[in-house]
Every structure is written in C-alpha cells, then in structure tokens.
Amino acid sequence: MKRAEKKARNRQLILTTTTEMIYQVGVAKTNLRQISKLSGLSVVTIYKYFTDKTDLINATISQMIEERFEQAESLIKTQDLPFIERIEKIPGPDKLNQELPEEIVQELIKTIADSPLLLRTLQERIKNFFQIIIIEGRKSNYIQTTASDQAIIDLFTLLIFRDNTGKAQPDPQRAADIIQIILYGLTNPGQQLTFHH
Image (cartoon, rainbow, N blue to C red):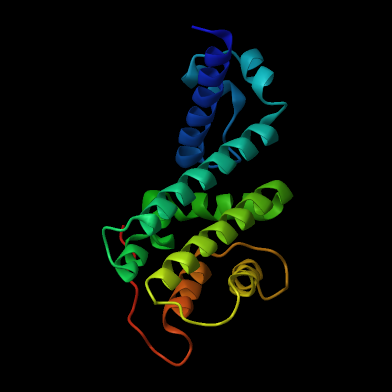
C-alpha cells in the first residue's frame, strides 16, 4: 500500500473510531487512549494526524456535519420525487435525537456553538443547503418570490443561529420551522412537515 493511501486510511480510521466514541460516550468522555485501543493505532500515530484532542474532535464533528448535509443534499437534488416529497424525506432534528441520547446531542450542539471553526463549517453547509433548496424549489415553482436567493439565505441563516440572547447557537428545530416558512410562507398554514426517521 502506498504511503499516501495508508495515511488516508489511518486518518479515516481515527475519525471513524472517534465518531463511534462520541456517539457512545459524548465529546467530553472521548479520550485518545480509548481511540487508540479501538482503532489499533498508537496514541503517537494519532498525534501524527491531529495536534491534540480538540483538533481531533473538530475534524470528527466537521466530518459528521459534511456527511449529514451530503445525505440531505442528495435527497433534495434527486428528480425522482416531487419537490415537497423530497423535503419531507430530509431527516429532521428528531432523527438525531432518536439515534443518540439527548445529553450527547446537547453536548454536540454546545461543542459546535463553542468552536468558531465548527460554527463556520455548519453555517456554510446550511447556507449551501438553503441554496440548493431554493434552486430546486424555484425549478418546481414552489418558491416564487422575487427576493434574491442570497437575501433568503441570509435571513434564514441569521434566524437559525441566533438565540434569545443574540449569541450564535445552532438550533435544529428552528431549521425545520424555517423550511416550513420557506415552503408555505407566513399566511398559508401549508401542511405539517413530517420528516422521515
């Protein structure tokens, strides 16, 4: 195996093992010795790829974010279903709560909110996701406003990431509500979106 392939495989093994640990015990209880034991790689090897636990956690959560958004974007871009059905198939915030204990979900949200790097990553992915929703919605004549795509994206991104104190805090339920507003506006009750689990 070529050196570059081995490095990529080892790095991915570390990230996958870290993801599994976070899902089992949370961010705070994830430790490098256990990752080393589970991955079969030494702690020294882990440090060759990541400078410290924070770097490893950030890389792992960034990958989690990327994977979730890639799945959702793939659903939105498929042309096999009408637009509204594609939206309804996007896993909602309740899916994450079903997959993981509430305390781990809250710890992940707090970790993202406390990390400028992760917050930026999430914000960019949300902006890109809204762009795809808007493009597909316009193609399907579901979104007919003359407002620019960027204005819509800016508004919804701002709404998702601000809590009552004005602090940046991601809120998955707020994201689902905003998609409801995108599709049905403020004056039309539309229909209750039931995201698939």
